[in-house]
Structures are given as structure tokens and as C-alpha cells.
Picture: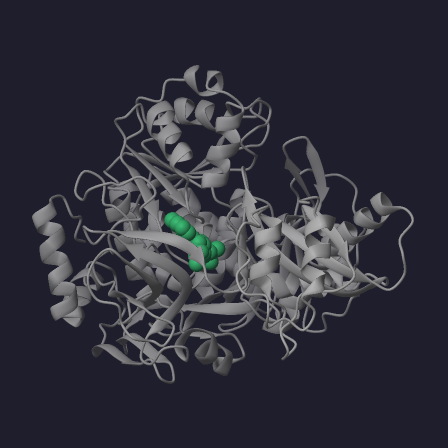
Length: 633
Ligand code: WTA
């Protein structure tokens, strides 16, 4: 597979990918093991949308991630698992061992009645069994839907039901930092809410603490898996068969299940992994994301394994048992590529340089960030303190929907610019448009970020609701995929992501729909209406600011705030808890009844110098009240 090494190669590859996308991607795809070659590289129509890559091709992604490495690197570490507690020893899975574990698990799933096309939901901490389980699904053609284990029972139940999953795979408990989290209990609660499609709950024993056991549904992982054969024929999958569903938040309604398929996703995840991280034979690569998010799917599981890399999987948190844990791990394994989120960088930066200075980080060749815009201070700190000025930073912009990295520097090949994701990877045809959909040409401009041409890992649909996929991404601007982000293209044609232009906020790199949080808050019996906006937050990137109208006066404000936070915790999970809750008597609304969020955002950001035109408001007097309620007057 092409690994770009010079700027000329980048330019040539990019040009070829635009002039002859089919030829370009066919060359990349040819480096994989196919059970049957494709008949046609690409068919697409963004109007429907209908995108198909490598039509008629048959493959199994796990053969490409595992089997094909057995001969050349069977004894090389595929996954190094670093536990939460640094006093516990790491677990290493070589490619041979991982292959065997995946096959055994796949056999166990079959034995439990799972067939190709069935959906399996995962609700697990960052333990090797999560990666193994996901690959076991792919082995037999079951569709995985991993739900981040910080979501609430309600959120889990919603996702199980939307996908009509037949099985949930979970752990008993989770050790995360100092916390001991009852994972299966959340699954039990979700199922008690009504998840009729679930036939089995497969429980991985992680800590071994006491559990409630439901003999009708529950089965132990070890009982089902340990006795299975280490051989499992890989299911023949069509390029366009579903590989996984991953739920993500949008500006309206409930989270939607983004669907990725086998062939294109495999090609793109590997291509982007090899190029963005410039992974070389025997390098040790570490991505700190959780497999509950797309970054973990593409850059812990599929991309690195398909590329034959050694990938670290970390169970814990950056600050446990001390603020130098990330750097200690980098030193311990002599990590060569390190990929994390700006929120983690900012949090660690705030804890002082001494934690990073203690460790030898000279092995690091590439540093990556993802999930949210990185501010200059954090970029500089990462560059100087972690990379010692020697490791290029790849600020990678992409989305759950894009499946893989889209805009990014290529280390030692393309130019860096702090806080700029810089340039598109080959195959990525960007454009900026104005709100009317006119393409903005030239440089030194700003606009809405769209993509004009399909890349192999573009989402194919939103599960069970294709129309929603069309309206969300493809209907805003004709024949373009709309990202939801605003971006700037500078004098040199480099891209800087400004942030979401829709009602999606990004808290510590976690995507959240403001409507989702509002719906949760509205569940509180006293709340009549609420409006949620993001505001700049030093560590989290964005914080959650909620304005609420209540039916009765509240005497104990502190208790009320806690109750609202608890409702959100129950409906979505702790990550969606508002940072600020302000009780108001009304919300600024236009005559058509639309909340003027611009004003709410300004107040939440403590920036009321220019509130813009408020004359069209139905209730202009409310603005003053909100400002003084926020303590700004
Ligand atoms: C934001 C995460 C600025 C963006 C892989 C996007 C970024 C959303 C960057 C997708 C970046 C991601 N710079 N913003 N390098 N990377 N974003 O689906 O707003 O969890 O639309 O995928 O994160 O979040 P998601």
C-alpha cells in the first residue's frame, strides 16, 4: 500500500486520486486479501445517497487484520494491553494469539445462535475482550454496535432497541482510575426498560466481584469461549455488507446509527493509518481513545491491525495513579506514535511540566490529536514538552461519518501549521460553501465545509432510517456531503477547522446534540423548557450551559442543580452533565418561536459586547434579565 514519503509523492497521489479516483483506490485495495476481486470500483449518487465501493468484491476484514499476518509476523505483538493499575502486568496478544482468541470467540457467538447480519451491542470498558469481541463479530458477519461504557442505561437501551440487537456483550465491572464501576448493572437496568430483541447477555469477568445473575439471559464469556476451537472459517462478506453501526449525536432527535461497510472501510482505515502516522515495521503505536468512539474503531482496532502494527490498548485514565501516567506508558513501551485528544493535552498541561519531564520520550516520532480544535497553547506545549520539538503533530480532522482521517498533515512530508488540520488526504475533495450553497473559491476564505466526492469510508446510511441520512448530510447542499463544521482556508490553501455550525457541541472531544441534552433536562418535573448551548471551557474545549424555565420557584437552588444534573446523568450519562444551569423566566425567541441561540451563546461565553440585532425578538426584555442572571451586570 502506498505510504507517501515526499511532497512530490503527496502531490502526485492527490492529483491521481482526483483525476482517476477509481484507479487510485483500486491500487490501494489490491494490496489486501480478497476472496473474490471486485467487478467495479465505485458507484455513487449523493442525491439518494447511494455509495458503493468495490462492488461485487468478497472479503473478510479479519483475514486482513489477522490471518494474513500469521506467517510474516505471527509472534509479533498485535495488541499490548496496559491495565488501569500500573502494578498489574501488561497482557500481550501476538497476532497468533489474537487470531486464536478471535476465532474462539467467533465460534462461541455462532454457538449462541448469532448469524451473519445479526446485531451485537457491546458495553464494555477498555479490555482486550472488547477488541476481540468486535473482531469476532466481523469474523462471522455479525454487525457490532459498540456503546461507550459511560452512557446511561437509558442511552444503552435506546441504542439496543434502535439496532434490534440480539446480544449484549459486557463486563462485570470496570476499574477506571480510582473508580470501580458496575458495568453489568447498567446493562441489567437497560434490559429492565424493555429490550425485547436481546436473547443473551454475554458477561466477561473482569474484576470478579459479585453480580446479579439472570439465568434466562446471562452467560459467562469464559464458559462460552474457553472451550471453543481456535479455528473459525471467516464468513464471506460482500464489500458493501455491514461491518458496524456506531451511534453519534446530531443536531436533532436521538443519536443515529452511522453505518460502515466492509470493503471501503478496510481500505481507507489502513491507508489513512499508514500515511498519517507513518507507521514503520516494529514501531509501537498508541492511540488513547476509547473503542466506544470512532477513533478507537478505526485507529485502535481495524487500521493498525490491518497494517500489521503493534497497538497499545490502555484501560485507565491519564491521571491515575499520577499525572504522568501517559508519559510513563510512552516511556515503558518506547512508543513511536502517540495519538490523543486536545482535552487530555490541556488537562495534563494544567497539572505541570514536571510530570512529563520525568520520562524519556525520545522514542516518539509522531504526535496526533483528534476530536476537537486544538488551541495554540496546547499545540505548543504538546510540541515542546512531549515532542521536544522533534515530533510533527498531526492535527487530524474527521468524523464518525467519515470513518477515517480526512484532513491532516503527513509527518515529514507536508507542512505543519499550529491549529490547522492543513491538507486533505488523497481521495478527499473538500470545498467551502456559503449558506446558499455557492462554492467559495480561492484562498483566505471561510465557509461551510463540504466534501464533493465519495471516499471509500464514507457512511452508507443511518441504521434503519436512510431518509435521515439523506436529510442530515446530503440535502443541505446539492451533490455534496455536508460535515456540519465551519472551516477557514488560509493564504496557502491550508484548512483550519473552526467548529460545528449546527447545534452539536463538543465537550472533551465528545459529540453531543444540544437537543438531546435539552430533552433530558426537560424530564425534570419542575422544568418547563430549556435551552442548551456550548461555551468555551479551558480544559473541555466546550462546556455545557443550560438555561431552564421552571414551573415553581426553587428554594434550594443547589439541590435543584444537582437534581437536573442527575436527570441528565440518567438519561444520557455523566459526560452530558451541564456545567452551568441558569434559571430564567423566559428564553429569547423570534416571532416564529425559534430560540435565538446566538444570544444565549454570547451570554454563556460572558461576551455581551455585541449581541447583534435583538429587535426581532418577541420578548426583548428577557435579554437583560438573562444577562443579569448570569452575573454579567
Ligand atoms: C470535531 C471524531 C477540529 C468536528 C473523530 C467534527 C475536530 C466532530 C477535529 C466529529 C480536529 C474532530 N479539529 N475539530 N482535528 N476532529 N473534530 O464524530 O467538529 O466524534 O465534526 O469524530 O469533531 O466528532 P466525532
